[in-house]
Amino acid sequence: MGADADIELQWSQRYEVGHSRIDQQHAKLFELYNLIAEGFNCGLGHRVVEPALEELIAYTRFHFSEEEALMERLGYTGLAAHRQGHQQLLADVSQLMAEFLDGQPVLLYELLALVRHWLQNHILREDMKLQPLLAEW
Image (cartoon, rainbow, N blue to C red; front, side, top):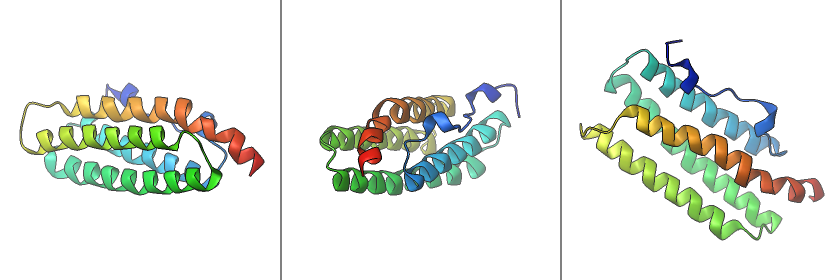
């Protein structure tokens, strides 16, 4: 681990929403994020970081699809707003990724900060709203 190890995220039970498949997917998102953070800490170049970023984006799309389908099955009334939040994150990350790949002066750290903030706050604030519905399911 590099000097900036504090940008890495530690998966813990506090992020569990109570659905094993969704929790496993969230843990996988943390793992993918940490691979990129480790690459950043070690100063690895585009050749290493780019595939990891692409995998993170692809897996995020898959996860959002799965999570939204679960919300629909549960009759979650906040689905439309939740879906909009997912779409906004993907748009923001895709924009930063495009700038990064185009050699524009976007910092990888900026991209990591966006994803890190999203993982921590979205799961703890938005995804946790599923817990009562999952408990009744």
